[in-house]
Length: 150
Image 1 (cartoon, helix red, strand yellow):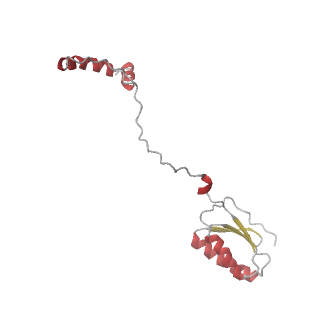
Image 2 (tube, rainbow, N blue to C red):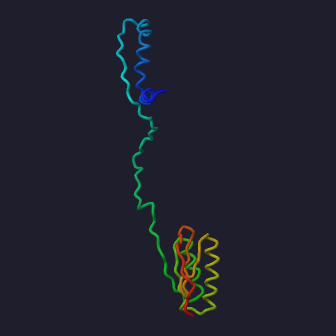
């Protein structure tokens, strides 16, 4: 098939020739009606259109809730439950354990590690006695080096 023939087929230019060949047969069947030759028209691909329903416009601000990072400095072990409530509500929490006794701080980190594990999140040490706890909807990129002054 020549390039010219392909071009004509692509843009449906060969329909006019086919129409002229079919026309004498139609004129014999219906001599009363006079038919005009069809023009070759480039066809557009048909796309199924979905009807737009009124009231379907949604603001992006209503879809995306504002994210919050909670800063927490617990003074007693009982505040670990408050921290875990923030994690359950899908908020990231930075926990500073510098103002609590070491043994209670270890217990808080253990409690938060269990909470974060149950929620599918992550806990990372970001400083001396400072931890970042995030739920599953928050991704933490990058790392903090392990060199700390003790």
